[in-house]
Image (tube, rainbow, N blue to C red):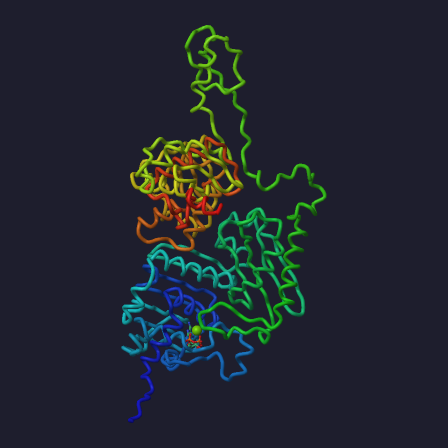
Length: 618
Ligand code: ADP
Ligand code: MG
């Protein structure tokens, strides 16, 4: 048989390597920003268009390259950063593989302009799909400008695989946050589609955090300092009361490089234990300085995991340092002797408003008038009725009494035609849903002709709310309640961006917005189902859900919004429902278009027929 093994041509090898290095526009941003930092730049400018798909440019004032270096930099495994294998164990630079530029040039149109301080003139190189188109000598300022256009122009499959511009933009913003936080001494600016997103002057770490996440962040930060032989820790944690629903603001940097470490994250969670509400996440910005020889970052070009030699010690030191800061800065109430413990409000009541007890009296009620029904009177609070016609006094109450379900809000009442595909034949549930029973504050049990139905209360309510919200969004006819005093909620600039994207849809469910500022938003009205005290929590949940991924088309955006609202506002397991609310929920559920599954595709109820029961008795 003839020999069949051949060496791949360079441009093919480069394209394959590019698949590893460049997954999406944000990978290019990361590589270019890191190169600029490695070149010793003190000012870096990032410009992108259309989520980086059409254009990414990074301009730095670093050391630049000579003509020969400029050409060589696009070769694979061409690097100025290491020379021998041992250098890998003493790395002080971000890059070292010499793969990034070769990879990027293989899958995009690239234009580099560069000049060193010593040279009089600079170099311009144009490369398209690994082929050098031009190389010329030009006048240029000191430093390097890298322009990357039409990413994946020659790999349509990869290009089609990219997400919407907003999603790609969000990934780029994340990358920008990480790198600019790791290098506060470098000034950064960031422009997206011609508008200026960030102007970060060179600064200390704290000011950099505040510049990125907004002025309000400043008061939330508590410093952490610890200097040991194994590690030097510096940075900030956020006070426990500012723990958020979203995981956004959690940053570890090891030797000025952003890293992810579930293990060390766990140490922080341990230090915060008991201080934050379940389901919320503490914010932190922590720098770990270790001997470069004790850390292995050589795992994968695009991965952010690293390996520390002595992880266990690091864990213990980190946890105790964070605990110490929480204690030292009086953030742990138990350590604050000046505070009256009796005045401490438990978390569950924080931010909740105290309601003025209300007595509703029917002013027009005349006990001597025969056959007049009292309206809106709550039992026990009006004058003694005359004996005659007393039965009528209660006539109106049945529908008017409030049935508390959760946190002062009620399940919405809406008399809809009850029909469900499953029960259509004999309308069993609807007709017989008069007797319900709540089991373990989790299930509602109701009988039907052929047996019984066990309904998961939380999932059922999610389904009801979900369809309700979705309907409101589609017909754009939600009822909203105006707030007497508009609420001002503060958000980070990137959260504001998300808010702007989903604002129209939020209005269709009943939110009314006032001014949207750079770091906050005014809320003037909320959907009727939402209590004022819940607004902050709901908005945080929305941000956190949408931060993961903003759906591109408006349908999936509405869908996600309805899901989040349903999830947040639904009755939960552990809540007691009175009989009226139980029946209302059952009726509402079986008036839904889909009754069997929750919006998150979970089973809403099960049926147990008489046969099933009888079989058990055999
Ligand atoms: P690596 O960063 O791993 O060395 P790259 O492909 O990113 O590999 O870059 C190759 C080389 O090009 C670098 O080692 C560096 O010498 C040079 N280089 C890249 N970008 C810049 C820049 N912005 N300024 C100066 N030199 C640069
Ligand atoms: Mg590099």
